[in-house]
Amino acid sequence: MRRALENVRGWMVAQRPSLVDYLIIVVGFVVLWIGVLKFSDQYYPDSAHYVAMSLVFGGMPRSEALQIVYDWHVSMGYEPNTSEAGLFDWGLVKPRVVLPLLGVPFTWAFGPSGLAVLTGLLTLVLLLTLYWLLRGMYGRLPALATVVLVLSSEYLFAFFTGILTESLSALWGALALALALRYQRERHWLPIAGLVAVTVLSGFTRQATLIVAGAFFVAWLFSLFGSGDRRRWLAPMVAVVTTTLAVQLLQSILFPFSQLDQFLEMTGTDSLGAALLETPRLALHILSGDFQKFIEEDPIIIVIIGLAVLSAVIFWRRSESHLLLGAFLAIALYNVTNGNPTHFRYALPGFVFYAVAIAALFAHIQSSLPLGRTRPEPIAADG
Image 1 (spheres, rainbow, N blue to C red):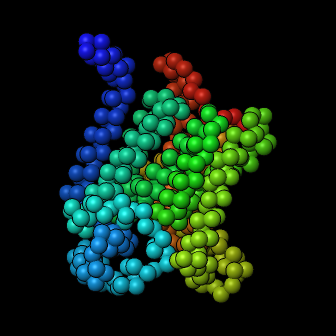
Image 2: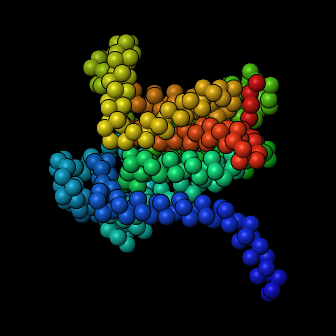
Image 3: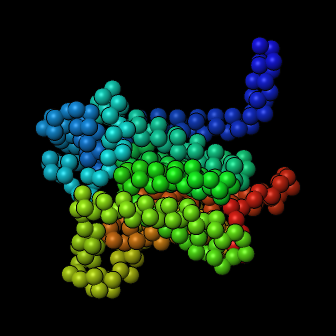
C-alpha cells in the first residue's frame, strides 16, 4: 500500500506542470462559460434544427417538439418561421444526426436547453484535446499559449459553446490529426480504422469532411517532392478522402441538397460558368464582411489567422503549412459556394490546423530564447 501511494505521489509530482496547465484551461473555460450563460445566450437560428431533432430522437412526437422549439425560437427574438419541414426534413441539416443523438440525455434531463450543456462540455473537451495534442508535438508552453489564445477569442468561444455543431466538428478534426500522427509513429492499421470512423462521425455531424481530406491530400502531395518519408501521409489521406467521398455520395442519395443551386443563387446567375466568373466578387464580399465584423467585435480572430498564415509562410517546407493550405482551400470552397460571410464558422472543422501552425510558430520562438532548452520536432520536414 505504501509503495502504491509513493508511486501515485511520484506520478503527481512528475505531472504537476501539466496539471497546472489543465487547471488554467479549465478555470478559464468555466469563467468564460459562466459569462456566456449570464450575459449572452447559446441559441442561434440553426439551433432550432438541432434541438428539435434531439427532442424527436428522445421519443417526443414531432408536433410537440415543433411547438416547444417554435415558442423558444420566438422568445429568443427570431422570426417565427420554423415549420415541420424546415426543422426535420431540410436536406442540408437532416444528415446532421450525431449532435442531436448525443444530446438526447441532456434534453431529457434539462429540456431544450440541454444541448447548450452538451456543447459547453464538448468545448472543454476540445480545448483539453488541443492542449494534449499540441503539448505532445511542441511542448508545454507553446501548447498552453495557443489554447489561451483560443480562449481569448469571443467569437470562437461563442461558436464552440453555442447550440451548433462547431465544437463537435472541431473535435473530430483534432482527433483525425492525432490519429494520423499516431499512424505515422506506429504504422498500424488501428489508427487508420479510427480515421475512417471519425470521418463518418464528422460527416454526420456537419458536411465539412472535405476540410480534413483537403489538408491530408495537400500534405501528401507536398511530401512527394520532399526528401522525407513519402508514404507517411498516404494511408491517412486515402482513408479520409475515400470515406469522405463515400459519405457525401450516401448523403446526396438519402438527403438531397444542391450546393450548386445555393452557389447560383448567391451569385445571381443561372449557370456554373457564369457563377465562376462572379466568384472573385463574391469572395471579396465575404472577406470584407468578415474583416469588418472582426475589427468591430473580435480582433483576436485576425491575430489567430495572421499568426497561422505567418507560420505557414515561414515554415513553408513543413507539413504544418501544407495541412493548413489544404484545409484553407476546402474552407474557401465551402464558404464561397455558401455565399455568405460566416465569421470564421466554416473554418472551425479544420481549426486544429490553425492551432498547429500557431503552436509551431510559438515553439520556434521559444527555442530561440535563453529559456528554450530544447528544440521541438515539427511534424515533418519535406525538403
